[in-house]
Structures are given as structure tokens and as C-alpha cells.
Amino acid sequence: MQGITFPGDGRVVLKEFPAPQPGPGEVVVRMRASGMCGSDLHFYRGAVSFGGSADTIQGHEPCGDVHAVGEGVAPDTASVGDRVMIHHYWGCDVCEQCRSGWPQMCDRGNAQTMSITTHGGHAPYAVVPARTLLPLPDGLSYKAGAAIGCGTGTAWGGLMRLGDIGGKTLVVFGQGPVGLSGTMLASALGARVIAVDVNNSRLERARAFGASEVVNSAEVDLSTTIADLAGRRGVELILETSGVAGADALSILGKWGRACFIGLPGEVHFRTEEQYKKQWTIMTSWTMSTIQQRRCAEFVVEHGLPIDDLYTHSWSLDQAAEAYEWFDKQSDGKGVFEF
Ligand SMILES: [Zn+2]
Ligand SMILES: [Zn+2]
Image 1: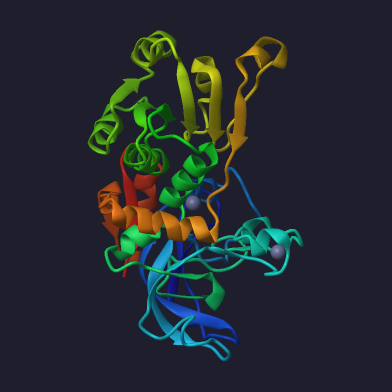
Image 2: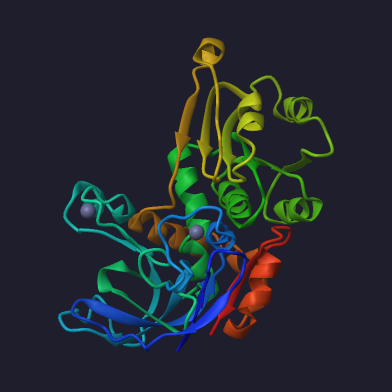
């Protein structure tokens, strides 16, 4: 089979790989949708290396059907034909982080990540431990399951870190696939969302996904515009997904504000001397736990959220070069490889 690889110089190379076989405790998933995530661009451009290699199949938003089951996998864990999402990390299984659903934070440093340390979903088949599988609810498409596997799930994880957002004003910086998901999920959770970006077509989409107000920070003065919108209470909550708006975000955060920083590379500076009287809570967030991924999928079904509409482009594997050239412009919506 062929899989998408990145040499790290802004090119895409389709390489030949043997069809995977499931070892003990493993399953082979027949990929149906494999999403393009903003963090792919770090590897595609070669600007950031997280230890991946040019021989690793890319894609960490995999979703599909169980195709083959290895020895020792119980039928109620995985059976051929099951529709599944994949939590795209696995660890030692026994440390505190792994046991609480955060294998990416494995205390023993054993974490495996699809597309970095092991092959990802940008190929017709992928082999993963059966314990990484989560059921794809009937009401969700494969590409919705793919989005929840990283981009949309990352927005959910950040909102869960912020906590208690219903009835409050939340400013979401960046309206790419993660930010737009944040806008949609937060609106459904009862927050009043002000969406910020520098691209008007992305802001139009944010409005369609539930933003109460949209602000183009390249066209207006951010502080005065937000102050007018937020009123005397100021901004209570911030979700920063762009990776470049750290200073802007803190400049508008009000008293008792809580801010969650997701976007990479991201720099956030503040002097406690100047800010301590505001009683801020500043936090980071890294994707989501296994439990949060499942809960996010259930929430999307319960609220009938239009996850499929996050996608503006669908590609086949042999269009991979064109697909990443388009995605690299970061001016449109989300893309997905469908099989
Ligand atoms: Zn562990
Ligand atoms: Zn991702």
C-alpha cells in the first residue's frame, strides 16, 4: 500500500509500505477518513521536529472500520467491521497518566504517537493497539470521527480545561479548524463567543458556527473593540488557538480571567507585578484524554453539531501534494483524505 510521508522540506512523498498485519493485542483499521490537522504543517515545513522521520506515514486523525484483529483481542474490544475512532497515542498502560486516559503524557516516557513514532492514518490501513479504539457513534460520519481525533477534540480539551463556560463571554483567537471547533462547541456549551481572526472568510464561517460576534484584528483596534463588546465585566475566558496572539490575548483578559493557550509555537509573557491584582488563571492544554475524545463525540451527536461542515476540501491519496500545498496557505477550512 502507499502512504503519505514528509521529507520535511515542504514536499509530499508517496512511499510504498507492506500491508500491516495485527500482532497480539493489535488491530488493523481500514481507513475511511484521515484528517489534515494544523500540526501536520510543522512536519511538512520541517520547522518543528517532534522526533518524526521521513519514513513515517503521516496523519494523526484516523477513523475507519476494524479490518483484522490480532491474537488476544476480546470481541467486545474490537471485532471486524466495527466503526471506530482512534485515540492516536498509546503508552505503558499502568502509570498514573496512562490509567487516567492520558497516554500521551506517559510517566515512563513510553508514549507512542501516530505520524511521529509510529505510522499514521494517511494510508489505506493502519495497525494500532486495540486499546486505542473508541466507538464511532452511529450519528457521526467517518470524517467527523477523524476531526474529533485531534483538531475538534483539542478544542474540546481546551474548553474542558477552562471549565464552567456556560453564560460567560469567551474570546476564541484563530478560526482555523481548531478555533472554529472551539467556537462551535463553546456556543453549544452556552458561552457567548467572540471570534477573532485576520481573515474575513474564516470569520464568516465562525459566525455560521455560532459566534455571537466576530472581530478582524487586522482591521480594527482589538482592545477597544473587545472592550465595547465585553462591557464592564471584561473578558472572562480566552481560548488561544492561533499560536501567535499571546500578547493580544492577555491585553484583553479581564479580572478573574481564565485563559487557555493551545496554539503552537506560542509565546506568552506577563509580569506578575503588573497583573497579579487581576487574579488570572493561565493554562495550557494538550489535545484530549481518551475519555474526553469519547465524550466530545457524544456531545456532538447529542447537540447535532455540523462537524462535517468544518471540511471545505476532500482529497484522495494521489492528490496529497496538491492537498498540502493548499492546506499550507491556512486561509481556508479543513481537509480530509477519504478512502
Ligand atoms: Zn504510562
Ligand atoms: Zn493534530
